[in-house]
Length: 131
Image 1: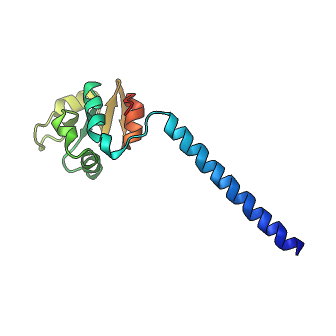
Image 2 (image 1 turned 45 degrees about the horizontal axis):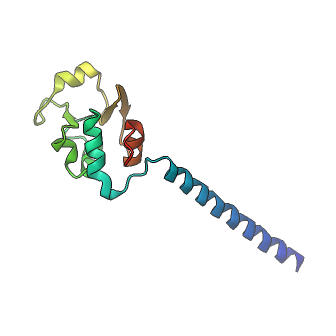
Image 3 (image 1 turned 90 degrees about the vertical axis):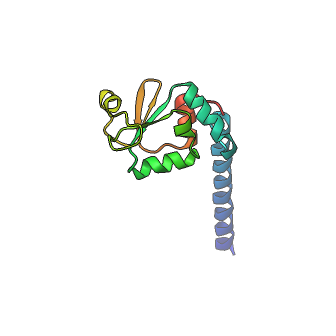
């Protein structure tokens, strides 16, 4: 009987630790101010545009398409997206070369370059857009 009690106590302790961990991580993410809900996509895109954030990409880049689809077309309509491939529409190849863009997508935020896909929360935090 004692062995069963130890197993039950161990399981209860493990579950309690897991619940505490979930509450702590949720509290941390909630208090940063950078949690972005789907309803704030347009607000985030507007803030990125106002802060002159740019996403450099190429029309054939799958990761760039993923980023564009997250923003439902707002990256292009708000002049955030910059096409780097000379075969793409409205290409700004010289600008991409001047910036040293070699990986797509590359985000330019506050003068810093960040490569790869970024989540809404990452973009909000990097650009200091409290949404």
